[in-house]
Image 1 (cartoon, rainbow, N blue to C red):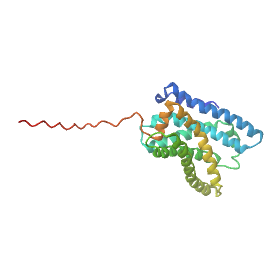
Image 2 (tube, rainbow, N blue to C red; image 1 turned 180 degrees about the vertical axis):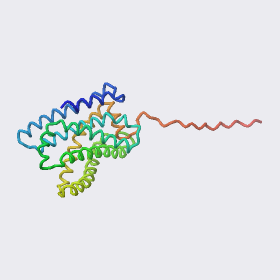
Image 3 (cartoon, rainbow, N blue to C red; image 1 turned 135 degrees about the vertical axis):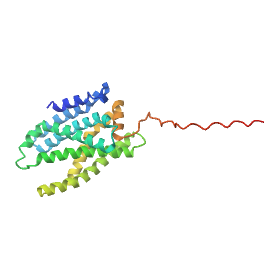
Image 4 (tube, rainbow, N blue to C red; image 1 turned 135 degrees about the horizontal axis):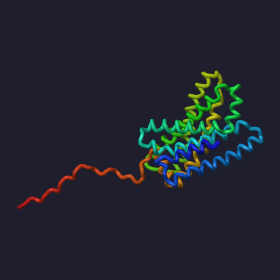
Length: 247
């Protein structure tokens, strides 16, 4: 259970995170851990396994987002497609690790006899989630390309997340239909995933709005220009002033 916390601690040792303010990343994770434990206890008492799985998956996604926020600056110099792919992989790897050591993973093993490809579906879900988050952040960055606008981020990010989940659902639904021959009610699942995804990312957005260190990190994730950056001065020589003609 301590393994995902140790992964976040390791990421804090990156050169780009050697700042005392970087440790504020613990705040949303602790909030999610306490809230998840309370909700899991309540739903376990009511024998609601589906809600328990969803809570553990959301908590795992929170660790994945913490990894994205911590490695984003290290990938800032890479090209946009490469950076997006690496951040999505970081999200998926840390999220799957966090879910694998959660109580829900032990319960999920009992369902393998009914759904043999359950862990494959979970892996696809976390990989898709990483792509949805990174793509949505880039789309919002294109909308807010003149600078960080909190209102635009809060309004457009859930819309982009929902649209991307809907698109991803069409692809995943086709894969599931080909593999298992069955289907599922994707519109309802898409709405649920959109609400959960935005609920998980919201504390990280609030942290980025109030903490200067993570405000710059959010700008990096959105690919926004640095507010303090000034256009490079022109290196071309100025034309010489005309000399007054002599008598």
